[in-house]
Length: 371
Image 1 (cartoon, rainbow, N blue to C red):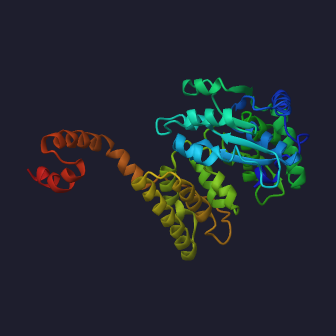
Image 2: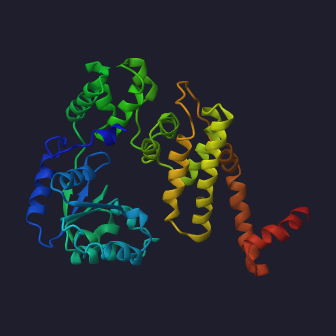
Image 3: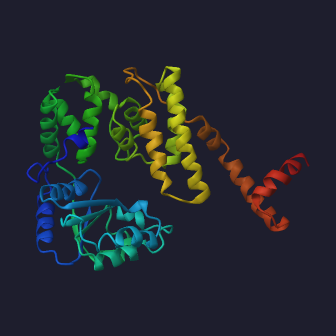
């Protein structure tokens, strides 16, 4: 995938964010168990890429973790706490990056922010955190232990320059007018500009106006139809997995979108069977998440339903596919108010009959409906 292939190899290749880079370099040079850095800004502005590039160039051991993977303070302390106190096996310096720290501050993440603060204070290595909005009231206490570094949206000219370099390397022609359109459409998000360019340039030697018209205008939250197109059309497992990253839908809903569109995309019985086999394995983890509330299984579910389904095809289909809204979600949407009304009545009955709503629905409700 281009976003991986063309990651900056050094800080000279890193695009824009001059002030943020200078602040980061000054902080890490002077670091002596000082405050953590809190990178904040919109998606696709190079927050993670800066730390990763620095670590690569300076031979640091780079440890990246996503805050949304942790479900509580105890788990954070168990996984991160010891690692931040122990020296590297080969004596290398370490740098830690905890992504999407604003995803840690919900009610389910009891003690999560407190555990992060404790780790920052006791860490023997520099720690960088990232978020979109640092002024969320849930992060108020954490801000006291961090130095804020803002990452602004990239300019059209920064994006245009980087896209031009990539397209020249790939030997793909794109006119100045189309290049400018692609740069403007991304609205300052370099990652989405690169992903969109790869999507329309796939299998071509020259990109024309009709190609760019097919992707429409990118919403900041990735359109589910664009995400499905990338998932089904790509040959890269990583690209398939990343295709749903910016979709404003939860993984369970995306699961049903994929399930409903496998037969629209794939044509041979072997491919369809293999894709549904991958989805059925993802479904096992989906059910385990529900029954055990173990959110570690979410990573396996996402891998199987994206990369697994994508890898089920032998060759990429060049045809245009009209992806359809999941039929089961249409049914649920149509009966939403009926189900809400039924649930309210069941809750009243639980108090009268002193049993669960499940028992009432299975054992009493059929008779109540007859009455």
